[in-house]
Length: 302
Ligand code: EPU
Image (cartoon, rainbow, N blue to C red; front, top):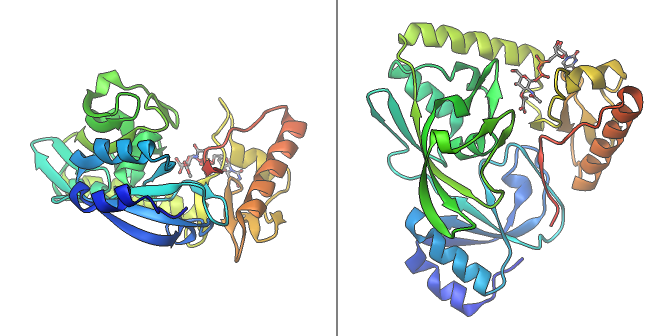
């Protein structure tokens, strides 16, 4: 989608927002799949309510992009514009055991920064790609920990109220790969309260998690992490593997040989290839186990 409305174009500088034309989402997502659209890069949180009001008034549909690491975007010219936060300065600041982190900060760098300052707890998240905002929105987790456990406070643009609010951790429900935020809410910053631990001890935990991840996940390949959520008490990866589907493909969309719940773009996969693979594998698991796997990956269709 191309922004043509003069009112929007004229207002962008005072709203602290940069326009980039015809950006390819394939370049902004870890799967390397997705069509083109205009990208609005937001430099000032405070401008967000006015910017979104203007887009709505002018009838311009929009979606928020975090780090693009858990996202499958359709091909072609996209029927919406994309908004992305530009990292604030400083990205992370510390006050005792509380780290205030910009939502656009990289999750891995945040874990490392906190570790170097003797703040632990998030070791398991070290290899999870994407931004802190993205991790927060879906309550990212790995190796027994989830980011929601450390949230003291979140600064969020609430789409329904059209305003920026500060929510306390207790006001948010964090479940397995799910939070009580509305789909259109936009994470802006978070305060994480982390346990004190000596750096060498945290580093040891980080090394162990890195090693486990390296040995079980296809890290060098284009993927969106796990495609399906695990069903209660089960493992999507194990079920897909048991069905002999490692290497199974639709076009260049392929079930990873290393971890069956990772689907990789092995070349020039289209969104249609990936969606067909997801639907096919879901159906096979349903037939064999009577379980309907739910997407973990977020799909932007329209
Ligand atoms: N397994 C297989 N074959 C496979 C993959 C896994 O048999 O191809 C078996 C493993 O041997 C193990 C069990 O399935 O016994 C679980 O596998 P794993 O330990 O790899 O964990 P997972 O449940 O598949 C979850 C998260 C990952 C997270 C890891 C580590 C989900 C959907 N996935 O994977 O998160 O990194 O645990 O904690 O919850 C993600 O969210 O994108 C993600 C990758």
